[in-house]
Length: 142
Image 1 (cartoon, one colour):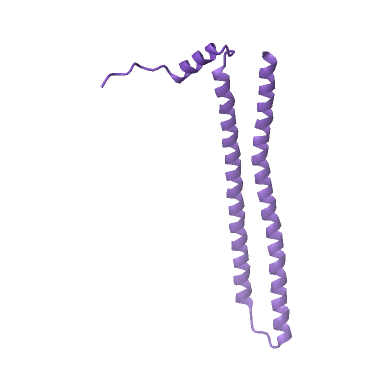
Image 2 (cartoon, rainbow, N blue to C red):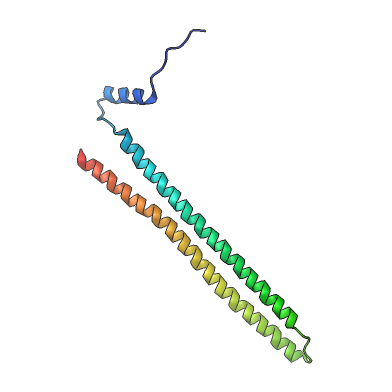
């Protein structure tokens, strides 16, 4: 089989193509730096999201442990009351406390999720703004 001549690198072919079409020189390093910053912003955003998810899961675990502890305490202190009114009153009180705790916990979880999402999005929003300024500055130089 005949040996093929060594081909030019992609960058050489791209540069030759640009010269043939009379395209202005392209600053490849600037393009790579721009995309490197984009990837760094994505990484920071992902880290912020992961940290938020970790703290959210940790807090949910704590809430579950607290709830199970309260249920265990209530079960240990539970004695069958003498009359149905007392039984109904204890069950109502337990239901009320459970509902209040669920509402409080749901609000706290929602706030943690909101903060985590906001932080992650703000990192990306800042990078988008910076990228647009870089693009405007690049057009201003020409």
